[in-house]
Image 1 (cartoon, one colour):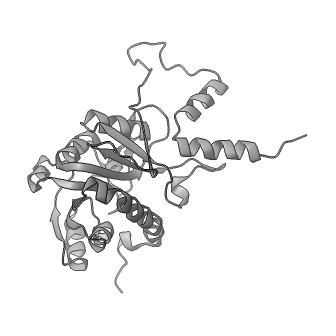
Image 2: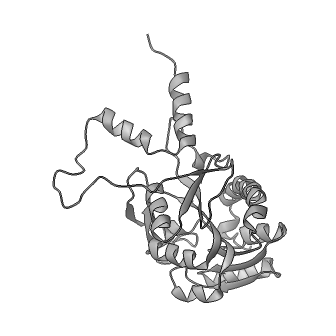
Image 3: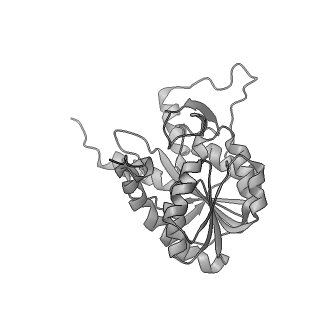
Length: 269
């Protein structure tokens, strides 16, 4: 009996069912005003989003770092050019430039995410869409994480996981003058904080042009007030101050969700 491929698992089916409509809706809003016609899907896996983008009229080029993914994606999507490239390989730039650069579920699996973002910037004519898991915290930092030895993890099974603030700052420093958050994230629990846990995923847009859309909110470049060379810098303050800092660093949509939870929380007498 054939073993199901990891990207065909129910977890990814549910995730894609939530992400797909958000991508389609956002691109319907941006496509005309930004003249988006061709796209490169970096880290395409088995080609779910490559196929989705092709189905809504984009000319699609796709790449993935694993030969087995390229083989299976090519079998499933015969009308799409799919190449084997590591996202941290500068030779990827030789494929040219694209109106839209699409990179979902990849950056947090890399050893050198800033290098990959610089490569993505070189590939991008207008717009970059990125999705991924983020490290907890409001500082623009990364943590080196050991991953499980599975085919949906990094090529070497350890990677730098950035905070959302770190992702935003890397986009700005790589040369994107505008970075946006979605005003409404996908309807999937991994994109929303609850009383039991934090939000673990995000979708961001980095653009070479200003965008006027109700679906996006501009994010300023984050700054860190911690100075590693100063032994007094970064010492945690009182718990209330820590909580206020975490709240201030949240995206606008998450602040609203937090306030709703506080307001609706039952009062104990």
